[in-house]
Amino acid sequence: MQKLAYTRTFGCRQNEADTERLRGALAARGYALTDDLAAADLALINTCAVREHAESKAFGHIGALKHWKNARKGRVLVVCGCMAEQDEIKRRIKLSYPHVDIVFGTKAPEDFQIPAGDALRGPPPKAGVPIMSGCDNFCAYCVVPYVRGRETSRDGAEIESEVAGLIKRGYKDITLLGQNVNSYRGGEGFTGLLKRLCAIDGDFWLRFMTSHPKDCSEDLIELMAAEPRMARHLHLPVQSGSDRILREMNRGYTAARHMSLTRRAKELMPDITLTSDVMVGFPGETEDDFAQTLELVEQTRFDSLFTFIYSPRRGTPAAELEQLPDEVKRRRFERLIELQNAISNSRHAALTGSVQRVLTDGYDSLNERPLSGRNSGGRLVRLTGPPELAGTFVEAEITGHNSWNLFGRVLT
Image 1 (cartoon, rainbow, N blue to C red):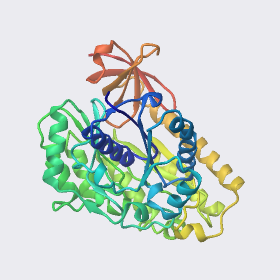
Image 2 (image 1 turned 30 degrees about the horizontal axis):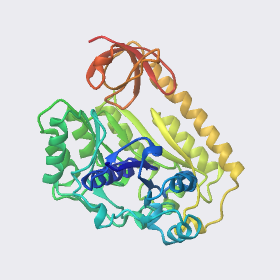
Image 3 (image 1 turned 90 degrees about the vertical axis):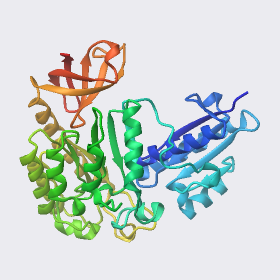
Image 4 (image 1 turned 135 degrees about the vertical axis):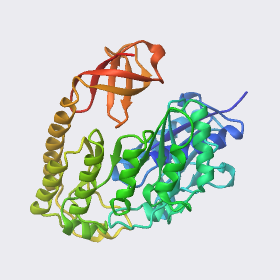
């Protein structure tokens, strides 16, 4: 009887891409993939160490798998990823979770190695393609350089071949992935790679994340505006609106520089979706520093934000600094969320009555608007329409909204 493997991923899109390659390695070794943990002979848990919440969830899940492991002789439990790259975590797993059989970090051992392009992905229409890994920035709060290593870039021709193959197989929304994707150094540079990929035949959108503001050039923004296959979405993490805090974070840019980039993007692409990461409660953040963050958010008017309360990460410089009280961080976080929800609602209201091109990616017959998808800017759109339209581009009239979604009906 064929053995079954179950996988679960905690963390970012890069972690998801790593899991896809690991799933490919398991399939190459004779495993069939299953979403049913109870039926599985092997469980692989890919972990994230970037934020405390993801780490806590992963440990909770690993602990709960003790019952699964003991329920059938011969089952194998694998823990890998960013958490497992840290010696302290490896020791904790060995001492407190002895039911774990195999532990490895972000660099898989030989038994789990396959070429980067041989990932076992989910069905179309979306796919992520890693183009680089690691980070050279050493932001004061971030563990990525310690668990992912220094930056390395894939060969441009290899990336082009992988993307072209995905488009031929029906994938229509391709996201280029990397911890600092616009620092890609694969010979032609990032804008050169984008031009190369936009020249591939097919009907598709090309997007990328995550960008670093210090490496985001006006040439990149101009390319996005000129190439119809480039998605109208720029995710540009700002983290703070205070130049003092940005220096303490070792981010390498100013708030004014970030605002000039987003302003230029809006000038060239009035329909662009702007998103960002904002961190609240970094050590030493004053009320004035936080007020500057609110001011930047208000002036830029992001479509949405990924918002985080700072949590110390072992081995980073910021973890050694005096920490703010949790109550202070929580209050500031709530104020930021309230402001951004109002902005998001306003930005979505402006789209009511417009016609948007939407790539549908799912159908839920129990939902009042059973088709779900996203427009070029990555906004979630829920639509009325038949199931056979799932996975296709449609023209849709936007008839309503809230802070998180657009609602509409299919026109074609």
